[in-house]
Length: 272
Image (cartoon, rainbow, N blue to C red; front, side, top):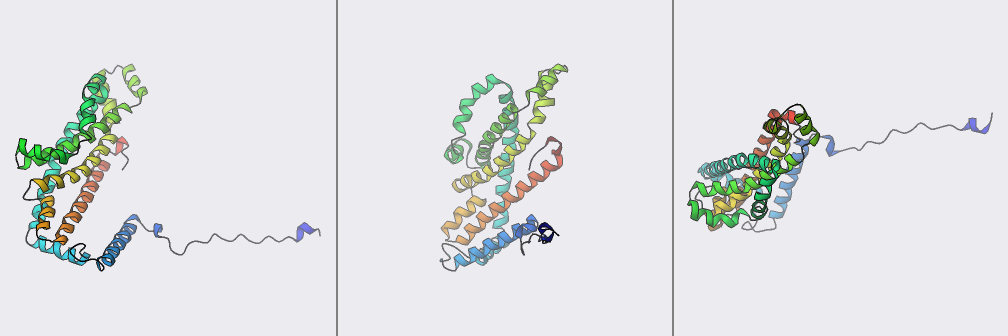
């Protein structure tokens, strides 16, 4: 028997699996653990900070119950949500065709591009005073600010969508006899749907940012007004209630937009 025959190979050991792996659970469980960890951290920090500066989670919950029982919280949610949805819908309705036309026609893009590039860097809060002077302190001024912050984001996304259309598809449509209008609606517009959804989602986030500024300056009702009025009563817990409610509303609305887009626009390869 030679030396090589005496070598005994040991069986390969199975790779050791970690005893606990958080990623093995679903995203819902992972998200719940993350939220609970955040609440625990908030509770621990609040024990070392006066309630005027940082109320505890339980005190914030008590403040939310108090505002809900007297109807203030629900009235504020309805008022802010109505302004956001109306302004956002108008902004998307204006921004989508405007972006398609600017992306499709170079002359129009050159004419309007200086205004787009100028105003998109001016924050909506800079126009709050002018909006109140021109449109009054009623709903119109707040909705106009939401429209303003929505139009530019949607328009820029649609321009990018039109410019990213595959030229081969446009030439193929032309070779099959499609005119400019038919090519626009059969090739260009369907190709820009993912950009439309992305722009609408980004604009929704900006609408929530804008509504607070608008309601702080000129509103008697709304989450922004609630946050600002809570300062007068030194109720930091109410401020936290308003902020958390805004975040939850934005989360829910974004999930609804994603669900609708997934159900109705899945054939356009919308990535969510």
